[in-house]
Length: 307
Image 1 (cartoon, rainbow, N blue to C red):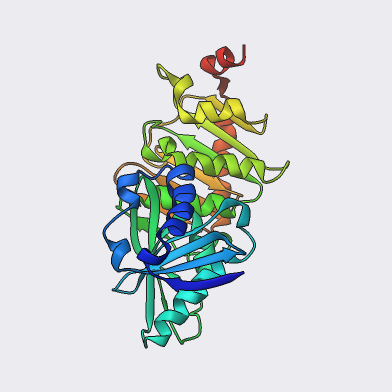
Image 2: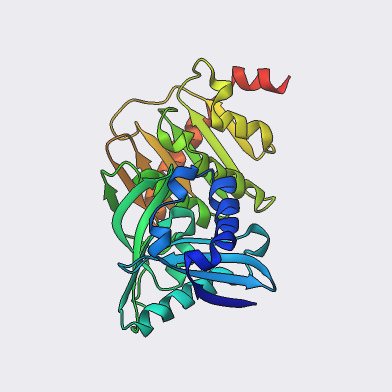
């Protein structure tokens, strides 16, 4: 295996092959967003297994790392970490002391474990939730528990539209046993985003012990076409969707998600609140969820789909 810094002109075909597979084909990023003029002036990092290009990234003139991608068959073999270290060394050789990037929320743990720390900037890019992160080079990694399920006891508030999907993806990636979801508004972008729905699918598939339960406020016309219902039909009995008349008081109303009896996310269109380690509060919300679940009913649309 080898990793080298290359130019776009010298390695365009290899770089395109990787990014086409990962971003365009796999993640459904539009081609007009993937290919831009900055490729020509960026420094690119290319990893090869033998003669096969398998991983890449690019560094822009301002020190921003981007387009880090590893082909599916080569993930979990350390390629991402090696590409990252190569980028850091390249900047250190230029006497640069900072590297920053816009991380997909699903990659938060990878970057966090490599010493990158989040800012408060949460945003959508190519319909994928992102978070801005950075690392100060040539210094010990600062201690942090930010967004760590079971450790981060801080209360996080945000009025940024991407906050709830970012925190949902981070929380669901760290969950190991159960995710309970209470939905008052099925039209919210989080419940219709391909990347977020994929998180639930991956969570269910990671173990035979995982469970997802979803409570919706009411059935709506065309519910069977909703991404959550489509996912339920493909999943096992450990993914359940039921309906119940949910309360409308200020405390209980809203979209809510519980992660492993540890973390809690509550949001609407204007604001999002999240705590990644508050067992007392989560236990209280869990009691209410169980009460609603006990009074819920099977979906009419769901029964139709199972016929």
